[in-house]
View 1 (cartoon, protein in one colour):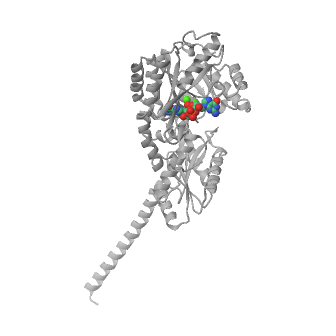
View 2 (cartoon, helix red, strand yellow):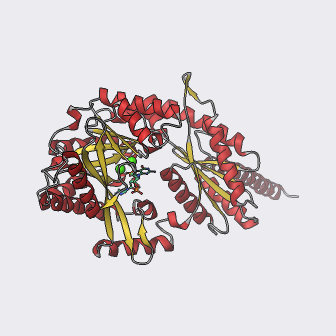
View 3 (cartoon, protein in one colour):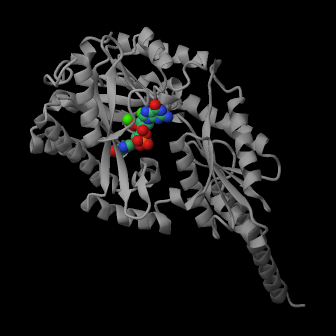
Amino acid sequence: MDTAWIAWTTVVLVTAAAAIALAVVAHRRDRCNARVARTDALTGLGNRAALAEHVAALLARGPAPALLLLDLDGFRDVNDTLGHTAGDALLRQVADVLHRTAGDQAEVTRLGGDEFAVLVPGPVDAGQADVLARRLLAGLAMGGFTSGGVPLDVQGSIGFALSGPDGATAEELLQHADVAMYAAKRARVGVLRYDPAHDPHSTGALEVLGQLRQAMEEDQLVLHYQPKVAGGGDGRLLGFEALVRWQHPTRGLLPPAAFLPFVERTRLIHPLTRWVLLTAARQAATWRARGLETTIAVNISAACLDEGLLGVVEEALALTRWPAQQLVLEITETAIVVDPEGARRTVQRLRERGVRVSVDDFGAGATSLVHLRGLAVHELKVDRQFVTELMAHPEDEVIVSSVIALAHRLGLVVVAEGVEDPGTAERLRAMGCDELQGYLFARPLPAAEALGWALGELDRRSGGPVAGPVGDPAGDPAADPA
Ligand code: C2E
Ligand code: CA
Ligand code: CA
């Protein structure tokens, strides 16, 4: 063998070995990079990319898996009040509990923020998925979470979708589980399976949304009005709450629950809110002409609590010369939590304009009092879940009386909604609740009946024919909470 040939062969072999070694390193690094790319750094669980991959793999293999999406309630509060380090620590504890509760077969991933997914290999039916979802929520409820020794109460909402009936592709399953989770959160029911009726993207919902545009133009929407009466003294009428309904051409009178949840997920909520405000303003003008001076409260969805709202309010007031003092806007805790700073600014400007703002469904959300701080609201409405069965549950009574005491110390008016029986009304009066609303006094009524109710009340009170304006619309109830 000549030396040149040996040298050349050596060079080739060494180069090949080096290339192989480099390829192995690169492959290892790729695998490692891929693993990093699919791992959630905070919890060590898989991330969104990992989930997409696993769903696709399971779908290819069959039988039908189920996808559960979980979102913690009020996690933002933990971040806001205890700081991000505590928030991160809580997310790690939650990841741990979910992983343990879901078992070996299921795959838990974190999609970001406080959102987790649990993928269950099939076959899974709706009952089994529901049971697992409830087990996961129970696991969280009993999780024994703490932050710096302080026990934390952790709750969540789960939406799930079954591959097959609820979606065919990974993308569809994810989107539908997300829709169900949002619906579960909104309805405060803990767990919900995907239902096209919740989905602003489904054909049925798109049809409804299309019809709703037309409904607004053709006056198919109607407002019903439910009276609020004084808790103390003579129990006089203090105002009405406007509640929207849809007089559907074929389906009859639809409650807000049948269309609002998905309207709220689209931009259509803005024209709807404007319609409600303008209609309430016109109604107030009609009533004034008939001798009824009273406040009307309008519900404002979270998405509408922004600068744009001020313009619409101005429009409604100007168009009908409605005194701003007779308009109340009911906003939910959710609206405040989503953008506390924006909410604070908007509420402040409404107050400067003379419009009153009420915090609706108080106590229902997982939000804390921290959000009320610096918020220029004038009223709290205790959520009706605590009111309706007040007599049956001593703990509800404790909650309600505490809310009343707290609100009064903050100079706020308290309204109890969902008052259905005289015993409850009596208890609430004894607790010093300022205003009462519920079926006991009247259901939400069409405008003409609401006027009749108000005038009839006035009649009964004065023992004679209608004497003049009802209530004291300009007076600030905050000044006289008892
Ligand atoms: P909400 O603001 O909490 O309104 C009170 C709901 O409780 C109304 O349901 C009312 O009919 C019902 N209610 C009143 N008294 C009683 C009672 O004694 N017992 C029981 N069990 N229920 C009582 P409704 O009209 O179905 O409205 C449901 C929700 O839809 C409202 O809850 C509000 O969040 C939303 N909503 C209604 N109208 C509008 C609107 O114009 N705009 C927006 N953004 N949301 C609206
Ligand atoms: Ca309300
Ligand atoms: Ca309410």
